[in-house]
Length: 75
Image (cartoon, rainbow, N blue to C red):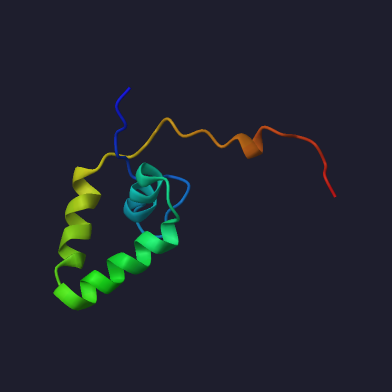
């Protein structure tokens, strides 16, 4: 099965673009966010590219948060 890139609904700060890229490459989202900021500061086109990604990359509606399903009280 082929992997698809989606915007993250659980690991997001603004629109979930960096979180979705991190989920796609199975890496930490903080690394992707810092890389994005660094590339934006160096090349300057990161903000425009991020806005384009917000409209082009679809939202992952199939995400299910299993942590809310556990109704156990753990202390």
